[in-house]
Length: 555
Image (cartoon, rainbow, N blue to C red; front, side, top):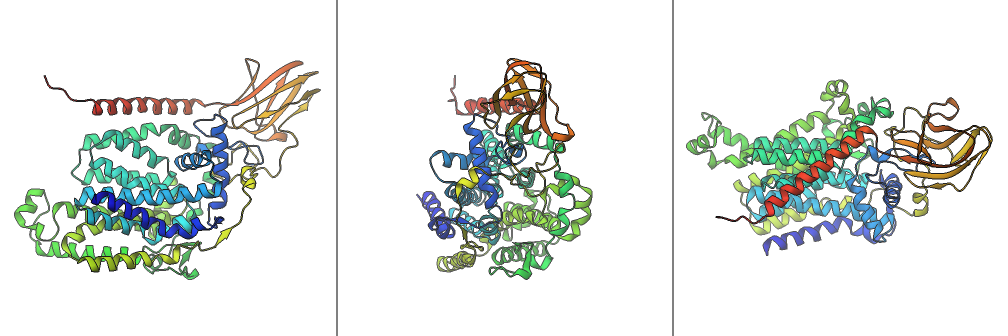
């Protein structure tokens, strides 16, 4: 009963920061909210049109479309599409997606901390510290980072599954982590590998589960990496990172009132007073441990037992401390300008865009320090309640969206003309850049005599008859991307996409006659390979799950 009671406590506490947001019917004004709603609508439209895996956003970019979902995270839009299918509005679906990411992140941390500490009270407090770290609210209610917030959800669940030695569960949580956010999932996946290396877990089972997660998500990350070369992303983002290194003092100065002088761009980057106290306490206890046993060598568990290390930090406690400190130290390095030379030389690192993204692993790692600290510092129930109440109330300044609420017309997001990106991440190299107006007709004859009518346009397929009185050239006002094909009846028609008058758009020629045209978005060879890997991995996971679930019989 205690386990379920603690989960109920987490659910109730998780509602507190969202009460104002849920009670107000309007959209909280966040950095990304205005672009996430049209993405949600485009994704739901694509699913409704039978486009899966979703890669193309057909209505965006003034109807010329763009391969938005070939490059950005998928899981958050699976969640919002489910809510929309049940009849919820875009605004409420956005709020609900943020809230569910938050509450399940707390439950995930509770499960992880419970496995590490074997103490439900310690697990509950660790989860509360994780939920009420200030940067969590920056991500949720200031940035509205629909993808990033789910990385916080699945990171602890991956480690929990590893501790449970459950291969299918590890794979499922790993794939959901990978699909939650492009760059943060990479960081947290590396943290999962570090966890396997540092802790006493079943190495083969753990790495197999993580590998299956990679395989299952191959349909997304392989095309995203391989076909990234077709976009302007690297060009537009190559120097972006230089502008967003926060001054080191801003990481340690609390900023609940959002003092502009302590912001990096529009982001408050303070780690949080409680996290700083946890860090300092752990360092003091670690120093005392080394001082008490300065002649001992940290070689193995047996050496700990022989030398009496357990009077300070035990083996598991030390591993948690070193795990947390490693993550924090490496992350703070990448956040600080000291890492500038690495950012300059490692091109893929620039896909993180902002160095302060590394606050996410810091925010994940520091609450874990409460587990070893709780074994060394005993506090009575009243003191703990007082401290936790202070931890929660200290974040109350963040609960009201910093820039208020926007009254929006949701029809604007269902018929959104822009491309929803900021730095050319999905602007294609064959195009002249984002479109600026709708075409007069989505398909038209640009050479020869003929007629087009009855155009039916779905996300991934356009159909229309072409009555050609002579040899004609047709432009389908769709941005070309590998996978687009044109068929006349059952015959595939050669296409062009580099006509200087119709730059980056699909053009093709037809002989005189009546033609039934299908312009269809299909999987490119690299996407077909990636899809095959995902399907084979899914079969392996289902087989593994069946074997694990089968009753064992003895002869």
